[in-house]
Image 1 (cartoon, rainbow, N blue to C red):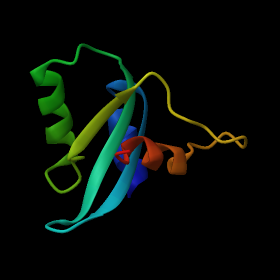
Image 2 (image 1 turned 90 degrees about the horizontal axis):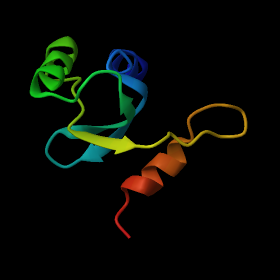
Image 3 (image 1 turned 135 degrees about the vertical axis):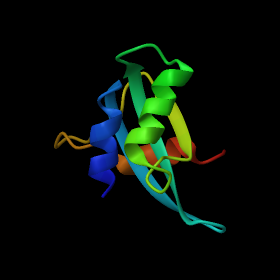
Length: 88
């Protein structure tokens, strides 16, 4: 589940959200939106994330944000995240 991927990312970032989008080659592509690193963003740090998630659950794209958008009810606004990733 995407929440498990988000939990692992939160070990390294102060906040994270993951979206699954359709992809022509892989069926689905994961995009991670992360806020601030809890550690340095070194290659070792990214290798740790890869090892923890495994290839199938690793987000193909990592987008750094200053903050995640939240709805009025306190949940991550996933529609707003999709809008951020859509080219204009």
